[in-house]
Length: 433
Image (tube, rainbow, N blue to C red):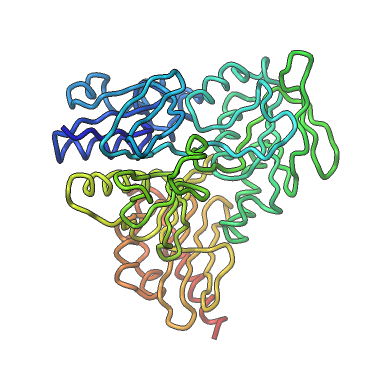
């Protein structure tokens, strides 16, 4: 019986395992050093905030794996011997495979800061990070202040978590405005104000220079590079992005760049070895998409795709139109299609913001053809299905603005803003003439 081994039990690896099982009776082994069972990584913040327990983050009961004949193995893979199809573990054990799927996800970035490995320094990615938070920041008596380094989506999540336990937070963001490499100027400025309105000490254009230790090897303070200010703290969150978790592949003959290099079929340069999820790097660009996408839904899609290939239906990875969602404390964010921080050549942005400073949209369109290219929404829920269809149909921006009510996903009794948006858009177009 063909043996499929999957390294990593995140959304990519587990989706692959489930779909291979649906399609075949192949032997499946899933390897992870992090946890016994698959859990929803994006739900870790809600465990800390008291909305659920860790067990609630596990989508499947413990009996699910045995019933579906999916073998689970705890351990760190140290090396892969591709000529003999063998995985070697740190404890000296070994496992042989017929086909191998590398789905090892991401690890938090570290940039060689002095003190970056001290007690009380953590990311927000693994279950162990959650355990460290509970250890070092259980309340505002044990943790008088936390410093977060890095202003992406993980950073804002960690700030919200600590804020929920009334722990003072200083937020060091190297950019001149929050996430302004991704968000257009008006949106980024609104999020700056929203963060500060929650009594979070947001420091823009600020970099970490050093993390200082007390006599016990625990975090005592951080030094800000630009001002040399020393900020006393008990916890430091390193949230300056993530990178593929592939250190164990150094020295192997599996081709790597920033991640594990794969073609459109998620195949590596070695026959019968595949890579999916955050650790996979597309060799050939797919439209405007990044070669590495650390996003939940793309990991799930890669798992479904590679399962088809392994079970005899060789299928290219086709992620479709870009979309994503997140939350900036109280403000929900969704994006469909492409809205870059600064419009590209032949692109234009229409921006509308509500007077309460918690709702806005930015629509991107081709200023020659008027084709709708993408939308960012803050504080107004929109339907993925509708925007996906409009992008496929290449609708023009006038049509999209006039039919926004069709895309609104908010409950019936919520306030609606389509008429205000249309009025502002009409004025915007008149001024453009």
